[in-house]
Image (cartoon, rainbow, N blue to C red; front, side, top):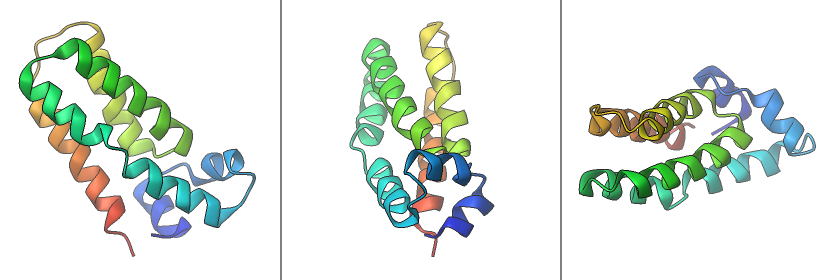
Length: 111
């Protein structure tokens, strides 16, 4: 993963770098740490169990992490899940979760 590949993916790299004092290596390290957050897996489990209150808390925490990294495509999907859960709407959370995990996978597989 590089700054350029993240930019091509749609990340707001300049914003993320600003939060990391312009240090590219540090930013990339933070992106890797953020993407390895165990709450990505936890979210799938709690959504499958139907525990939407816990799912909201989990996705809301991820929203902060991914938002600070300025990973716009993931952030947008996380925001969509968050707002559906906040409103306690009946939607296909599995499809949204699968989209999120696919986006995460795309970044993790960048060279």
